[in-house]
Image (cartoon, rainbow, N blue to C red; front, side):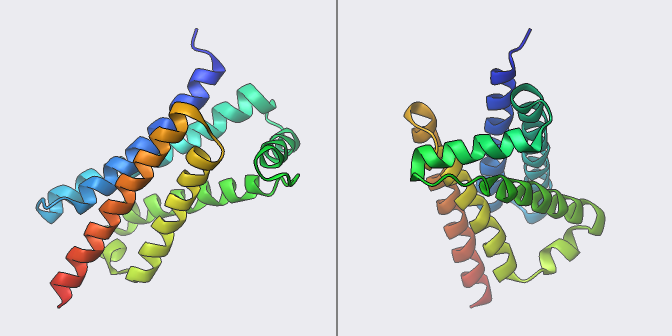
Amino acid sequence: MISGELLTRGTIWISIAAYAVGCVVFAAAWPRSDRDRWVRLAWTIGCAALLAHFAVAFHFYHSWSHESAFVDTARQTAEVFKVNWGGGLFINYAVAMLWFVDVVWWWVAGLSSYRRRPWLLTLLWHGFLVFIIFNATVVFKDGLARWAGLVVCVCVCLSWLAVSRQRSLSTA
């Protein structure tokens, strides 16, 4: 039987990896229609894995108790920042909700609607995701997880720099 720890860690790393792959593909010089199809699939898998991560974490670690998750988040925050604050749990809820809305928007409203949103909104959204991934993997983890998280964050940031550069060249 697969342990709760393996499921919890595995689902979050699948989420992070799928998002990172989506970012790299988004920056690739492929035909737009092919690229968009693969990016949407990667980000959908990433979002689904994040929701699965929440479910298995709540099941195996918190017995479906928000209070337990809040207390555990506060404990982890106190270990790193010496501040007993569980509010990061609400930030995690916001990430899951916003990512779900983002993915649904792309699938339901279609690519043209998704692509028409303001570029600043796109940058803010993905900047927020990178910030969350950095904190989850580099700030709150150590060892191999920290180094893997750092590599992922650097790759994602370089991907978004490439996308921004491509965008500025195409509008110039």
